[in-house]
Amino acid sequence: MYTKTQVLSISELRASFEGRVIVPGDGEYDSARSTFYGGIDHRPAAIIRVRDAEEVSRVITLARETGLELAIRSGGHSAAGHSVSDGGIVLDLSLMRDLQIDAAGRTAWVQPGLTAGEYTHAAGEYGLATGFGDTGSVGIGGITIGGGVGYLVRKHGLTIDDLLAAEVVTADGQIRHVDADSHPALFWAIRGGGGNFGVVTRFLFRLHQVDSIVGGLLVLPATTETITSFIALAESAPDELSTIANVMTAPPMPFLAEEYHGKPIVMGMLVYAGDVNEGEKVVAPFRAIATPLADMVRPMKYPEIYPPEEAGYHPVAVSRTMFIDHVDRAVAGTILDHIRASSANMAVTQLRVLGGAMARVPADATAFAHRRSRIMANIAALYSQPEQKPVHEGWVANLAAAIQQSDMGAYVNFLGNEGPERIRAAYPRGTWERLATIKAQYDPENIFRLNQNIAPLK
Image (cartoon, rainbow, N blue to C red):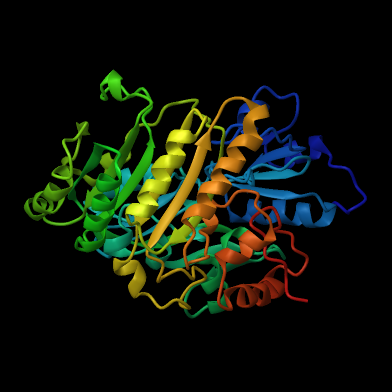
C-alpha cells in the first residue's frame, strides 16, 4: 500500500496493471496525454488504463493514499483540461467499452470508454437511440454526468433524463449501484453535478425509438433577419425538432463557394426526430428564410448525424457558455458586429433553442438546474498564435457582456477554467448547497477535485 510520503513505484504499477501504465519516456506518452482541445500541455506522472470497476477502485485508493492529483479521462474533451493531470495520475477509462443492449426492454448498460458516436451507431442497429451531444467523439462519461444537451434535447430531454441507474466507484474505493432507490442522493448528484462524486463505471440508459430522421446541415447568409428568423422558427417548432445555429465566419469548407469563405454565415444543424414526411414540412420554413448557401438536410438514419471526424484536429480556443432569454434584432446585430470585428481564425456564437421535454422535468429533479432556460449561447474564438490569447479573451468577454440578459446560469460541460463564481453559476437556487452536502458524504477529502469543483460542506 502507498502512503502520502511514498513515491510512485512505476515497476510495481506496471506489474499491478499488467503493463497498462504509461509514463514519461514511453512511446505512447504524448498521444495518451493529449486532449481534444489544443494548447493543453499537462504532463502526468502516470496514465493508468483500467479494465473494470475493481481496477478503478485501486487507482482511486492509490491517489488517496499518495495525495497525488487524480484526473478522470473518458473522451478527453474537457475544455478546462481536466482530462489530464499535470504531475498526478490519469485514470484512463478508454478500455472500458462493454455495451449490452436490451432492444426489447429499450435499455442499455454501457461502460464509459465508448464515445457518443460509437454508442449511437450500435443502438442505431436496432432503430434506437439515447440523446447525447453534437460531437460523436465525446466520451459518454463526461457528457452524461454534466447533463447532456444534444440533438434530441427537445424531444427526449437531456442525457441524464434517460439515465436509469449507474455503477459508481466513490472516494473510499467502494463500488456502489445507484438509482432512485439505492443511494438516491448520489444518483441525484451525478445527474448534472459532474465528476465531483465518483467515477461512473457503468450507465444504464433508456433507449427511444429513433430510426429515420430529417436532419443535417443548412448554411444561410448571416444577417439580423436570418438569425432572428432561424431562432423564432426553432422556438415555435414542435418538440421533435432540435436545432443549433452557429453564427460564425465561414471556414474554407469544400461544399461552400469560395466567395463566402471568411464571411458571416449561419451554419445550422437540424434534427427532426419523428415522421419523415412531417419533418420535411417542419424544416421547409428554415430553407425559405433565405437562399441556402448549402443544404444537406435530408432523411437519414439517426446515427448519420455523427459523421467521421477529422483525425488530429485539436482546436485552440477561448470560450464562454451562458443562457439568454431571447434573440431579437438588437441581439442578432450585436453578435454580427462582434463576429465581423474579431481577429480570430474563426469566431462563433452558437445558439441552441431549448425547451420541450427538457423543460418539463422539475428543476430540482436532478443537479442540472437550468430547466427553464430558453436559449443556450456559447461564444468562442479559435486562434493559433498563443500571444494573441488575451485579445481573444477580451473579445469573448465583451460579446458575452453585450448579450447578457436575465438568465445568469452556465452549463457545466462547457465551462473552461473560469473560477469559482462561474462554477456557482452552473448550480443556482440551492443546488450548490445540496451538492456540497452530498460531496461531504461521499468525498469528504475532495479526492475528486480536478473538475468544476464543488468543495465538501464543512
